[in-house]
Image (cartoon, rainbow, N blue to C red):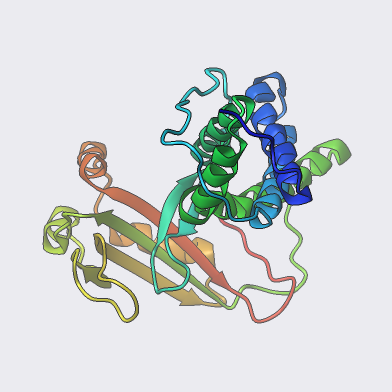
Length: 285
């Protein structure tokens, strides 16, 4: 038994946005410029999120949902802009985790396409139910996480393109003085991480550490352990000097040892700069 699509403006807007998003993913390989893919991806994702928030509640009419898990084999992604950092739960005190714009887009694409398959098969209620329920509980999170990363990537590529067109030298003009403070953290993370073992392996004691399951100030216990080594400095010491201090505190690089550490744990270097005014600047080689 099939049914007509609820012709409400909200549903029709979302269907149009979903088809537009899927069409972008399926045709992205024909767009050679990463900057153009970023700009188009930001536009279709922003429209999709806005349309999803207006979807009305719905109920599924059938016992089964259309199965579909195909993905374009030539999806090119967003090149060097794919990885980004995000907070797992911004409502609690949580560490940043790694995200991928390409993975987010393919995940959202799969959910949308599954609903479109139901819609095109005549099960309109199932399609709206699939989209609305899973936006709140599933695909909405990567969608809203990806938007700020896309926006920053678009701004960065637009600036690089403008500089190339103007044939400007690769210089940074400092008009407002140095940044006030810099903090650089080397972090090693893992669900079974033992901080003392990392200290022994690296020959450095952490400035902070924790084990999986330890309580935090707000929210659930930590999901993974962490070994954190932070170096900070205030002006006139900038990010360059702080980075040199952090690297100098570590043992002579042993590529095999770092490779072995990466095979067991996640490693991240975080750089934070703090400004008390506008137009602060710094150099980081």
